[in-house]
Length: 113
Length: 113
Image (cartoon, rainbow over all chains, first blue to last red):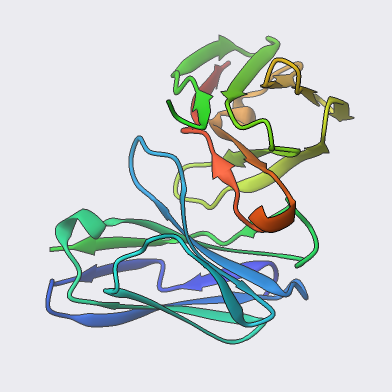
């Protein structure tokens, strides 16, 4: 595996389900990010982890819960989601000291029924 | 007013044309500027990364930053059908805004043979 991988690629869940999204980076980076991409809207930064410490929580509802066990893995735990949470969820990684150059995974297309 | 404004298009050009994509921004603290390309059903791919004002060239792509006008551009020379994608501008202020990229809405580009 190379780059940034995400699983699953597609997910359909009901509002009462609990599921998790997984991201893994194979680039030796030490910062990881979760973004939400909705139709006709800019990418929205959700969470930032630098050296496994969360440094940014961009006013995200508590039904989204991130977890970063090490600098290569990132999870997004989902529970009691709403239909408006349906979107493409993207994971990215970068070198901690690099202000740009974030590298993205292919995303998980989430549909909440 | 949005922090980053980007015309969503869509923009349709013939093969071989020069394409000009633009973003304006309002936050004078932005110092790092990026262009990403996103194909359908894929994650964004970093194309160009520049710091402060000036030009940067990479093959058929040229990125320009004019901080005095708060305006950035991406030029694509000799455009190809494979350039058909959504182009996203992104920027970051550095320092305490570490890792926090602000994206434009994206411009949908189609290059037809």
